[in-house]
Amino acid sequence: MAITPWLRLLLLLPAAACATSGEREAEALRHALESSQASLAALAPQGIPAQPAPRPVSLTAATSPAAMPALPAAASGPAPTAAAQLLGAPPALLRRWLGEPSLIRAEGGAEVWLYAGPACALDLVLYPAGDGLGVAHAAARASGATPRTEAACLAELAGRPMP
Image (cartoon, rainbow, N blue to C red; front, top):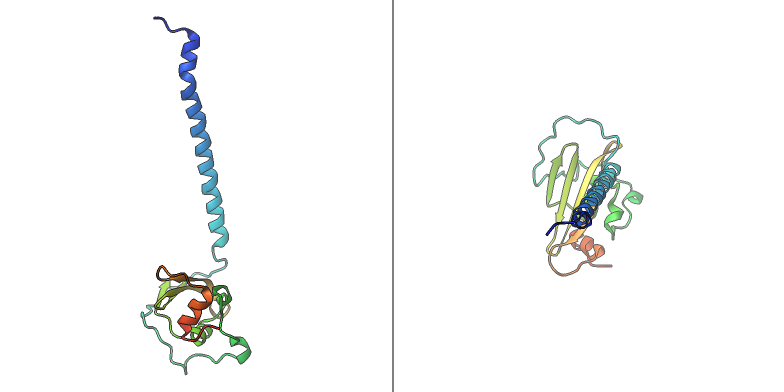
């Protein structure tokens, strides 16, 4: 049985459709990647000066209360009830509100602080800001399956009753 030219075209049609679909998928993936890269670039800290090699930080790096600069009472304000309220806070204020972190890790010019409690954890990233470090990222999360509000988590970590 001879294959007519029309039948040949019909047999090639699905292959052509797949190529077009593949090209559309590839273009969509390229667009998503470019969008993600632009989002990451927008979130990158700006104006961080080059830092010398990070100094070693112990896991229980504690600063004695006498060595911490005193903050004015107005600057300390009420303890935060949301992680976003920690943004921009200096280390001394964090220690006043939450005590010593469970872990401090140097990451280039930044420091990552972890406050861990029985039912939740708080992750903080501090970057150089002004004359010291300041919180640039704060995220509270539940440690188990039980849902926790940020307010409950911060209260737990600070060792105070829920408001």
